[in-house]
Image (cartoon, rainbow, N blue to C red):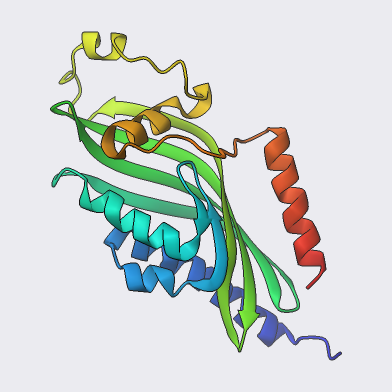
Length: 207
């Protein structure tokens, strides 16, 4: 097999990265057809609230956003991407900070969630698309949109004890704004993260 040229490696890495970035833009903008086009038909996704096929994720994300308050906002901010290639397979790993504005119980909040994304990508028929996405969560926070606008009694009344401490505000927001509860949650520095990374490395080695 002929070794890929530097130009081909650069092109492949660019196309992998562009597709991963574009998927986040489509998600935030509510472009559901565009979001679906970033994934292969048999792809799987695992997030804090979802595990299943990409098609199911697109449909449920659409329904979730339709149920939000009109003033709600959302942006996935991506940074520090690393693309590792092996033939027609690639892993694109990057950081994401999710910024969300939510109106809960009549109060406006700003939420942030820090996570690491593992996108396993394949080149099929000359096109790079995601075939597996796993989100690994690190921490979250919750602040009033306007400082001092939410009384301390509101925070004191919150029961966050059934959520993982590192991402309790993220999980609380999901439950309050869309009724979604954690499923197979992957957390930073846990055996589950180690297993996910091992599976990704083994998959890439078979490329």
